[in-house]
Image 1 (tube, helix red, strand yellow):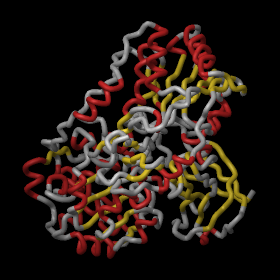
Image 2 (cartoon, helix red, strand yellow):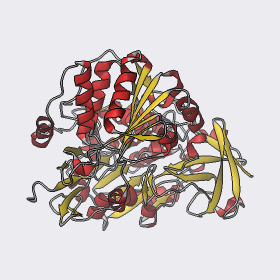
Image 3 (cartoon, helix red, strand yellow):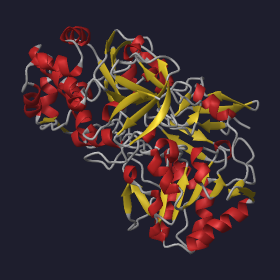
Length: 569
């Protein structure tokens, strides 16, 4: 097999979108791919060790693939289409994975809208500059200072971090993360006060005459209104609410003055009801400093990887759409779940479980997960090593190619094959060929030109979470773990608390919120603020505590809009 044909793209939900190569029956990191740079991360290594599904299952018994497809077709033909739900996750992010949505759109299923991940922040970015497009990664490499804001950069983007690991870092995060420990300055901010810190930064920039007047004049709309928001209260009041000392802000401006600055903005800042406003305040500060139009630096978020491409499987339909965090699984006659584990990752776990128990659940994926316990029919998806695909990254501009490097298990079916088969059975419009779709993405170069105008946020109405904070409750914080990815791989079901809380290692505690409760075992970690309860993403019990509600602007989940109480069990 030639080197051109042995490429493998990592399918996981990660900024880096690694490119691998099959060499002597082993997957190695591609040296041609700029961010992968010859190395594979721990998550890619874990993925290669996973035990893939090799048989379809119906009501707990193994059946043939053909039998599973017949059951699915029979159920679909005998169910009102609008009473079915198509629910897809981010367990596999190749461009070919959306082929199944084409079928369910033509069929007439109810579809979801909004996001469980980045949709709130994306709405904030789009309000200011129309599209969520990251700068070229070379601008990150050429920056002098990197501000890591609500993102554990060295863990969630280990390959991108390796390209810039010798830079000077500033971290803004309630948790003393790995990257915070490597930073020149760590501002251990109070949760949901990031917008206040952005306004305080703007005030300091003005006082020190550091705003980019040329950028504001040429590209900015509403900068005066934005600045007025920042000066409508005493400077010292920000110190009390954000938890960031003014002396540290002074040190920060001494550090960034006359430097090329990049901001790596994470998902932590936007997991709130008004998260779009919070994100927009931070992006407006970046614009006030002119970071968006300089030859180095800028602001990186979770980019719209499909921007500039025509979606090759998109089809028009009049499908009913439901806000994804508010989904009531039990209100449908059939729920088709692809590449997702809602029992762990969806808000309000108890509501999810109750709903899944009251409908016919079809799970389509590569491995068994917690949701499979409630599935009536399990259809095994083919391994990413056995199907053609292409990855677009939401962290950088590079593409990753996936060729077939292993013979497909005949008891499994790819997403494209399943969609094509269902479309044929129902007589719908056929899909474009695999080669045509992949060739389009491989050869198309989207125009990623910068925005022409930037609209500063001119009004901020955010209900501060600290107004409801008492000595008896805790802020709720989640983040990615180093050795797992969401609900995949290593499990960590602990709650992490500061020793100042007077809880001890190994304590069994009951944690409750307005949304539910669950039991956890305590681990003491003084990297956590004393008023925070911290959990790693993928914790099996954490979403018993979170609200099945949507944010104010994007139909998306607002996991951290909650305070919790902790008691010894």
